[in-house]
Image 1 (tube, helix red, strand yellow):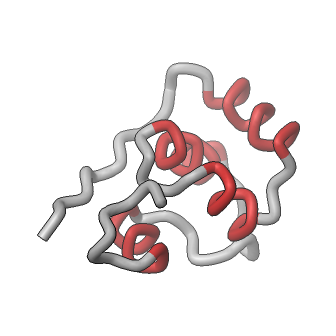
Image 2 (cartoon, helix red, strand yellow):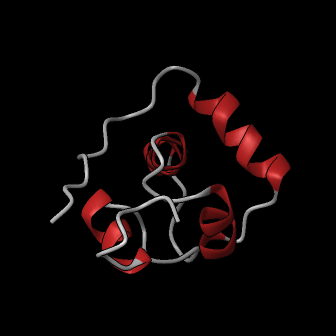
Image 3 (tube, helix red, strand yellow):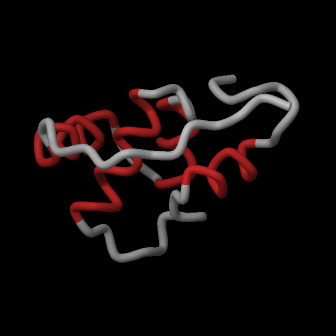
Length: 79
């Protein structure tokens, strides 16, 4: 589990400002938010993959598309 034990994955996603499901318009900013969340261990790759129905190849494409321009996600605080 990538997020603190005292919060759920839903709460981690909410705090990070990530989409709740795969049913959104995937703008470059939203893709970058998900890539950043995985890189910063806000959510795991597997959690992102299941929630957003991503293949490894698709996630890697998002990483290439966003390059170094990944937007900042607020840090989660442990209670």
